[in-house]
Length: 170
Image 1 (cartoon, one colour):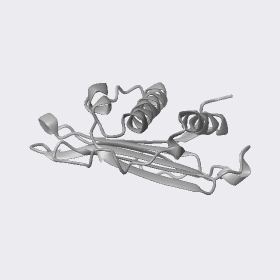
Image 2 (image 1 turned 30 degrees about the vertical axis):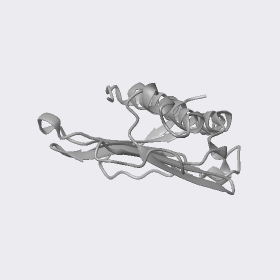
Image 3 (image 1 turned 180 degrees about the vertical axis):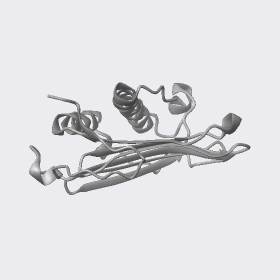
Image 4 (image 1 turned 60 degrees about the vertical axis):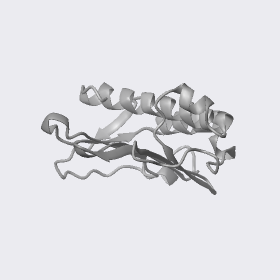
């Protein structure tokens, strides 16, 4: 089975694609991750989202050396979305709470929003520089779950984007 059904780049083309209801699993699924900061090069960020219609949207904005924003969109097969849901379920992130996690600060912020079926959860925390930041937090176990889930999701997204578009995301 192909990983990617069809590509829709930023040139304004639109394509018909089956909705999640037409696919194998009739469970609503949405995920959005954002990490960024505002600094001397402006608003720099990485953001991606898995939408209910199967579209993966990716944006990477860096103004370093006048770099431009990278935006990519791709439709994923039900198998890829199922794997993403499995990664989330296996992480048990839906059991976590961000009340004792570090608040966003001048270094930056991270946001993770997930909808699976009737469950909707949203996390906000500061940027995590290393595992040491996780271990010294007020909730190292919960933040560790978040940290590793984000690493897995970034790896999946970067693989899908580079597989198709032949770019090297940061």
